[in-house]
Length: 414
Image (cartoon, rainbow, N blue to C red; front, side, top):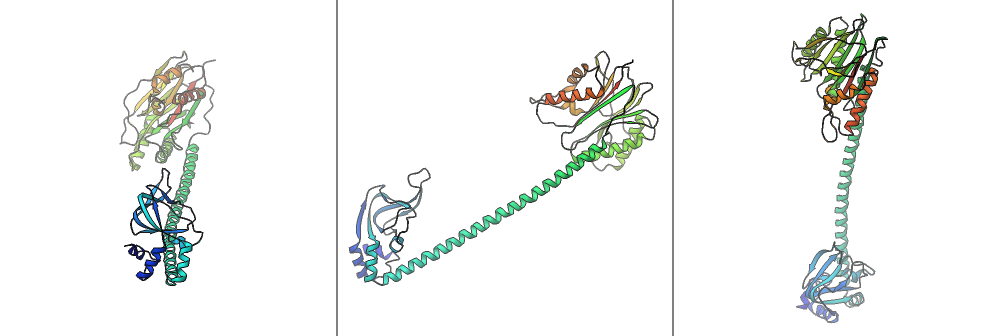
């Protein structure tokens, strides 16, 4: 039975039974208790062992939470054969008894003496070393192949990330160009008149937005005032805004009244429009001599008027439709005289809809309350103060829509 144990070991395989009997006779017998350590990972190898009785555990990270059982050696199986032929080699794992066990043990010195008596052992030793070398080469090849795959994957991911970064930078440059173009559409400065002053502010929800405003002198000395809000946000809305602004400016130069101007603009938009976008607009013409502001409202927020005594009134209004939906469009057209010391305030719904961190919208009443304390201030100060109040109210919460403010103040009589 013991001879069969050695026959399973490559170093001794092929030796005659008589020679195996002799080898068995010179091997030491080692008894081990349950969980007794035969050798530790990293120890210098000096002995070879064959299991005669019981079982051995081959371990990594023995005694730690990460302890891992790599193999179970049973009767006839062996460990440590490389220590016989590689002096100074270190154990690659820890071996521990699993229950009471009995082992056959051979030292390197005993093995070297046997090679002198049995030259065939030297040939077996060379064969075992060759097999181990082949196995190591195969394992190294597989590991290098796997590492090459991992490196290629990492390279491909890095290349893709670089491409994404380049694309992101390109989009950011294009967004900045779009933002610059949009700002160039807005007026660089507002008209300066003796009897009126004007103010405006715009705060896009994104780098580019869909709101628009303009205050410009008409050919006959009157003043055109425009505010609008394109549905949605981003570059498509900014492009649509630019088209709507250009159309309004072109039609305003013809001398038409506010209502006719928007009707013509709506006709052009619906004729050219190939998307579902639309724009709410309030366009008015201020007669600086009569102080009458004649405006047409296409689905936009009704304006507020701040009287000289600090009271705030929302102007009467009726139903109206946004531009770009269908032709002809229903407009809310009105005339209002601006008394000395009064301020007309126009805004987009991004102001009323703006929310605080708790989700409560700013609302029309907060606008009216804030506006009520600004009766003695310039139109620009009115816009600056209201926007600052809104930003403080928002307190860092996400801005969902563009905000645009326009104010017209009739200077108090001297």
